[in-house]
Image (tube, rainbow, N blue to C red; front, side, top):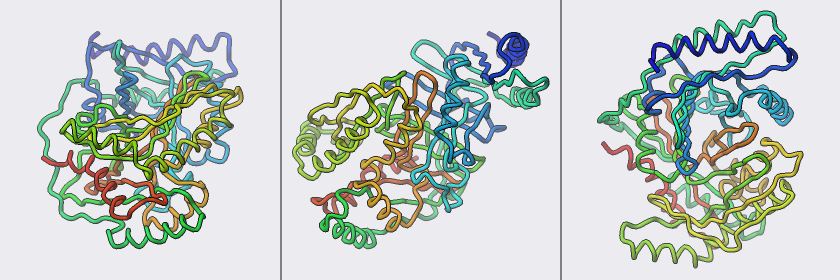
Length: 459
């Protein structure tokens, strides 16, 4: 298909569907979706070229065989809706049932489920899910460009048609791969919160809380900020993360012209297909080694470590309890296995269940997040200690990032991630602390996790 025809096809077909909608069902809003199949497209390059749009979302789930780039807004749920989010999702599901298959809301719920005081995070909101105006989707079978439009058939005139026409005109249809040799600007300065001495002091206070029985596990994080001489190309970060982390879920969210959140997470919070739900209990870490024999030794060390096994047990028990509330029936692996990624390996167990009939995606998010893999146990006591001792707001770090639709949903955990704000890059990583933990060891584990980002900055 000729590129020049695509914009006309989008507008003409949506107008045609609108005319049809006036016959029959006039009381319910629904999405209209037009798809055009393409021969080939580079999704990161395409989204990088969309200079006229400020809201961008990228998702690459290699194991599921799904890569998606979304731009613009066809519909959005934002901060003002948080008090009634469960009810809103139920109503949105009704709209989605009347709409073409494949319509999905992409977005995030921040770690604390409350508005951030830190201005760097404010543009991302407490909660924001949107259906993109345009989606470029690459699956194992085909590549398609989609245009989404939310129509209210009971309105005689729909002013959003003018917005649709403007969006179509702004859309770039250059699908070529424009990746080239790129050098990040020089790093002017860098600073970490906390510093090692501060970490040791916090660790000692937390250990006292664990020894007293107030908490059993907590995850404390570090933020490493680097100031560059010039603005950072966030989509180049996404491109390099994709190349260097082939087994992870790669995500990128642009909330305004200067704010990006990007990451390559090894962990998903849950995935749903109709009423079937699946999740992973992941905790405990060792580095990978290029030497096969040494890598195997580290794997055995991980499987035999009392500290790592206890850390994983707290996470697994939490997910079991949550699945018991959410599911009519579920199964779980009896013993942990090892999940291997490019630089790190972790203990994990898989859980699968059948959801109860009254459960929606908000119920699942609200129940599972934050798990002890990113927060601690007991939940409320650990979250208070995190709030009291971490000298920065997490924002979307370790928060749910993903999408939901009528028949499916998937949310990743926003770890191995970074916030880009103009020429400032802030990388986040954390470590789980239990009774057997050692301050120096946990500090080094965080450094190993930060390396996932620092290594891709090398030119």
